[in-house]
Every structure is written in structure tokens, then in C-alpha cells.
Image 1: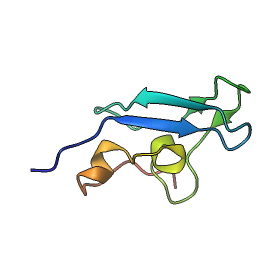
Image 2: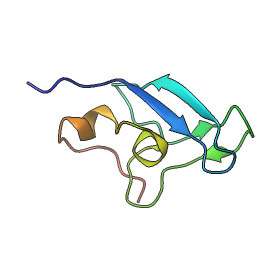
Image 3: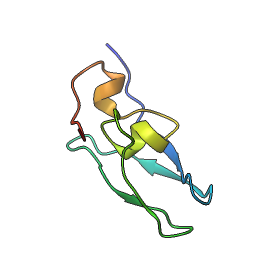
Image 4: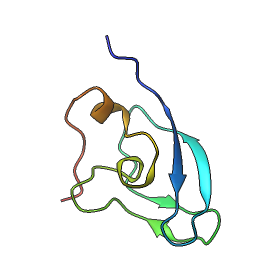
Length: 72
């Protein structure tokens, strides 16, 4: 059984502000507002959520090698 890590640190690509967050397990988080510069982050093309694009740990479904929501 895979142990899923729910803590991920999001780093803003605009101002480099970092914030540790607890990832949701029941939905994909497509938007995240940076607390430093107020930029609204969206997943990069090919990533399913903001954690997969800007976090230190990918989202729970990706960690479990399962299908995740897509932003395409």
C-alpha cells in the first residue's frame, strides 16, 4: 500500500513566496492565490492541478498512480 503525503509546499513562480498546504483528497485544486503577490496560479499545461505544477509533492491521485483531473 502506498503512503500518500498530503503536505506540499507551493512556490509562486512570480514572487517565489512559499506556503505549506494540506492537499485535498476529494477534489483537484485548479486555482491557488499566492499570499505574497496575489497572483492566481493555474496548473501548467499537462498538469492536473496547482500542486503538480508548483508544489513540492504531487497531488494524492498522482502519488497513487491513479487518474487525476485534467486542465486540458
